[in-house]
Image 1 (cartoon, each protein chain N blue to C red):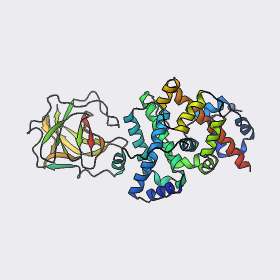
Image 2 (cartoon, rainbow over the protein chains, first blue to last red):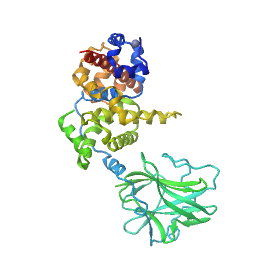
Image 3 (spheres, rainbow over the protein chains, first blue to last red):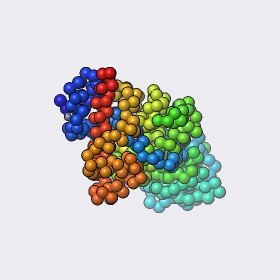
Image 4 (tube, rainbow over the protein chains, first blue to last red):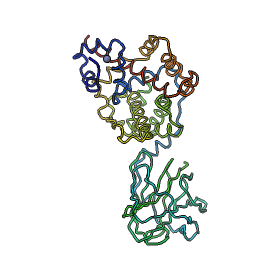
Length: 225
Length: 189
Ligand SMILES: [Zn+2]
């Protein structure tokens, strides 16, 4: 009698009920060991890893990346905090827009989905630094957490859209709804240009403008603490 | 697991921020080592999977019944996240079965019993009992000496890294088999 995944679970629950199997397992058996290697993860795996990895002299303690973990554990901030209407000159007024409009149009990693048939939407992003200077931001760029992002969109038709933030390992966070007009404009609400503060963010942050028709455009930046 | 780590888990569960940092500091090297033995990850992927592992663990800390289970529980999460990242990269259509952390400690009858049966000394004995050969050499270098990475071990032994991963998995399966037998014998007494 060899192990199979079903029998393995039954055995773990009541090993005393399988005397023959115990006898069999007392000797090496490649078939049973294959099942043990392939079975879905169980507490058994963690116990084996913990014991085996405890043999070697302990590696030096290491907190590389703890800031990212901490950031991911923080509760998501409400829309009013990170995305604010500000009395800034928009990216358009500053001439910061990118000539080629869509920055990123493939499906995002964490699940912001769009359709291929929708009219193309473009999003250009600029970072405003604490000293008041601006810099255009492209996909994959590093940005300081002290900066604020401002946006400019490019839409073929007027439509409703949402601004969404994505962080690895977390559900996309909807920051809020905006009404887009056809053409190239700063992203703004009635009270002013919308700006996203990066304060408290660490690591990869994706910002997506998702149109009600399924179109989308966005950028992913790496935030340095 | 040392009593000190034990207390740190309890404190982390109580929401002490420094305790989370301390758990991370002490356990990240184990997670990184586990991932190194599991497959070929780039340094960035190791960082990402390690981060995901700790976020998942720290968010679910309240579901852990015993502080003593923390390390094996964390390493199960790490293995799950690592395998899932590898299968995603391989373009697997079906996602890996999602790990149900809530039932982790009940899954195998009792995690306590398993932990009681398996300590470092038992694993050492099992390694000593392996017939001389490539598997023993690999296991010795990876688990006992713990200085070389899986890739370095592969280079030294003149094999591909996947051969090292396979040998480590085969050895883990042997330990599991031995553990099942011991679990049954304990129940009988
Ligand atoms: Zn068998």
